[in-house]
Image (cartoon, rainbow, N blue to C red):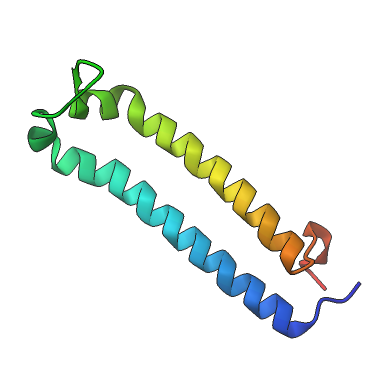
Amino acid sequence: MRIPPEHRQRHWLRTRQVTLLLLAIWFAVTFLSIWYARELTGLTLLGWPVSFYMAAQGSVLVYVAIIGAYAWWMGRLDAKYQVRASDGDK
């Protein structure tokens, strides 16, 4: 099954937008929580300083959520633009 070129272009544009958004979230969680660690120490989450929580487990939970969001979002985009994994080389 051939994918119309306009579908392929829109699909690729949306894929890049989703990827950039999720990379921005990754960057914010990874680097901004380290950069502002001293300021985040004043905030508490479940009795622990937010900086400690983010270093211990919060960042990992956000990373797993990013992976899940990417898989869900790309599944929806693939269905919307009728793209299958085997169609990539055609």
